[in-house]
Length: 354
Image (tube, one colour):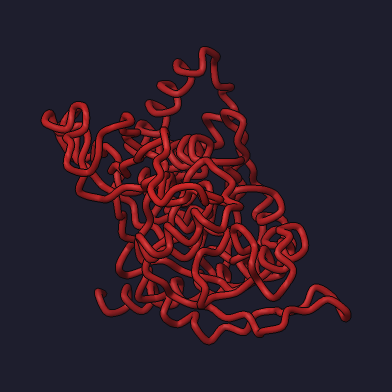
């Protein structure tokens, strides 16, 4: 009997990755990958760290298949949620780790879509700690063109005429945040302006080396439609019998989220990005997952629970480690409900198409 084409593709991808890593991937691992893909496709669950993954592993709603495949420093765990086959993988901190992990997941395994979940800071004054938000759009807001001192909004940026940079998205003027200036009415700041830039994107079905640009990346419209069913999910508001929030957490679909490899704990910048971009969650991984899924043409959605008010100012304690466990648990609760609804919706669509 000949080898099935999907297996050939998996072997080819794996061999390419082996060469990049400079070491041979064990034959046993290659066989496990090929065998796993025979049982696909899977929904990929991409998770930043163990604090956010452990509640899912311990949930009775997740059934582990006891299969794990270790590759390139990542562990891929297999199981089911509501009859939906899933692969769990932890990224590690920040944009590069999230991008590498997501690309490995999509390159090696038969993936039908990606759900990224975890915790985040909150920039939206209308939402609160332990609320869970589902943004419709994501952006990476740490790709900048930092303008030299003396130039302003009317001055063209270096390489702007070649299409490398743009002034379309907007900028942050540091002088607007100078404080304690009592001796004169006008002031300036040598840090000048930073201009936000879109990412270069090379779609998997595009012409190699022909770039496109993307700043706001939309989640999958079908996944977002399914997420509407989550707004009535009941969330926990207490860590224990003595430590509770002053409000009842809720699920909210919001317009925008942002990511950067920056831990944001600054109220001035938090308020700026909310006023400038109408951003709610701020984190360090989601936009990277979004960009990889965009380039690979794979449906995705992001679920983030608000663990702190990035920069302080809440009526509740703002220490991230105070409510991080509660927020992590709430993110898992919403994830599980999403997968249940997605599974039901997928089965319904399949029955209609038969």
